[in-house]
Structure formats: structure tokens, C-alpha cells
Image 1: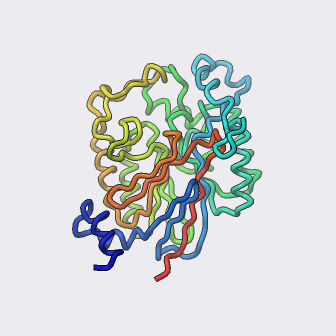
Image 2: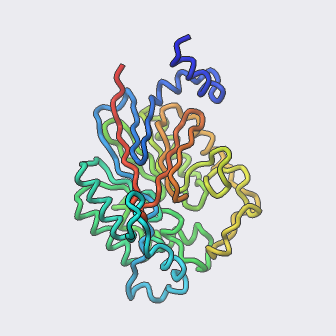
Image 3: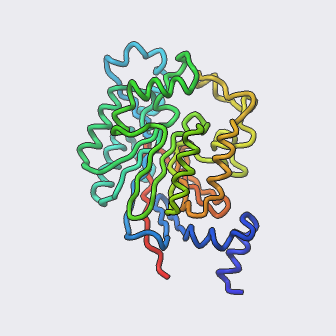
Length: 324
């Protein structure tokens, strides 16, 4: 047995059984070094790169936000001063966001992907500022909400109601006329499937959307704010954790939000998780939320979480045609 085949059998086969070789072939391979990621796949038409940004936590506000200060007060003070992830020097979220967009423009990325918690609360001032910054770069972008983007802490309502309300009232310009809960972008043969899981749950229409994308047979990359469950990670780390429930929810009082449900995840979320893990042409998952870069490989599927952009961090991901 060749060394490459041996490694594949040791690392992949225990999870995938007889499907290991076909899934490995369809997914290609990947490499990661610090905040630089590369995906290699034969279906990629030509080389391109994407800048992934999460957890900027902009706290800027103006007179329009004054009626909501009782709900924004804690998060408005959470990330006012940060330390740059590379230099350790003092910085702040707005400065980091601008710096990252400058890097994206200078490096000629094909897309800027904003994957949640760009704002610390749904501030009109912050949304206006972000929209203008993105317009100035001239780069195409896609946005999906994080749990803080639409959350005014302590405001009455279910998480689904609050997400719907503040998406329509504040976040909507960032969707560029698209549907907030899910969308897709295709670049050089790769389809980037964007799904809002900022409530830790998946809706039936989102599962149907994902299945439709899988049916294209094209290489996919899944973009979510909250990473998916990975073995040995904490309950709060990922969407789809089998122990996710009210009993495990330690932060609902601090964050002044409804407690996770007693019954745990709905069946749609469980099904979505299983189908994601068994999609052979899914190259990887990119997420934010945890504020700590990580890599988990599940069923041969890499999931990469980026460090927070509040410290200047980002992921630059390159997609490279795989040579025979």
C-alpha cells in the first residue's frame, strides 16, 4: 500500500467507511498556516481568494440609538479597545475593519465574506458606516448575521422574532436585496453557501436550500457564523451539539436573552448537521463566533474558525485548481 493510501485509510476510513476514497477525491485537500488557508480541488476553474471577516463588534452609535441604550449598554463597552492579533499594539474595531478591507483590496480578493457579529448590537450608525466602507473598496461582498448583530440585550421577544425584526429594521442594507436567511455566490466553479444559524438552529427552508445546492454536484463551501458541533468542543462552540439545551445554557442571564429550549435542537437542525457531514463535494466550513481560531476535521471535512476581526484578524482563503 502506498503511503498516501495508508494515511487516507487511517485518518478518513474509520469515519466514512466504503465512501472514504470517493469523498476524499471529491473534497480534494487543504492546507492552513496561521490565518492563510488553501483549498485544492480539480473542479476549481482558476485560482482565486476570499477574505473572511467575523466578530468585528463595532460599537459606534448615534442619536438614533439613544432610545435603545438600556439594551445596548453592555455590548457598547465590550470591545472599545483591543490588541492587534499580530503586533499586540492597541487598536479598535473600526480601525481593524478598515485595515482588513485595505488588505483585501490590495490583494485583489474575489469576495469579502462577512460572517457575523460585525456589529455588537443593531446600530444604524454602524450599519451605515460598514455599508459605506464596503462601497468604497469596490469589492463584491456577502453578509450573514451573527447573534450579536440583531440582538438588543434584554429586549422582549423570542430570538426568532428579534432576528426578524432587527434584520428588517437595521441590517437589511447589508444583504444588497438578497434573502437574509440564506444565499449563494459562485466563483470559478465553487459555490459559497451562506446560511444564518445565529439562533443555533436551522429552519426547514434553510435545509431545503442546502439540499438544492448539494444537488448541483458542484464543489461547495459552507459559510455560517456559529461553527458546527465538533467532538470534544464545548456545547456553546457549535450548532448541532447533542447536549445543547436549557440545562447547558450558562450565559442566557448575562446576555439577557431567552434560554435555550429544554428539548434541545429541533430535528431539522440535527438532520442538517448529518447531511453537511456527509456531503462529499463540500470542501469545508468557515465560521466565526468563538473568537479563537481553530481547525476541526470531521468525516474528512475541515471546519475553520477565524480569530475576531476586533483584533484585526481575518482568514484569507485561496482556492487552487488541483493538478493531476
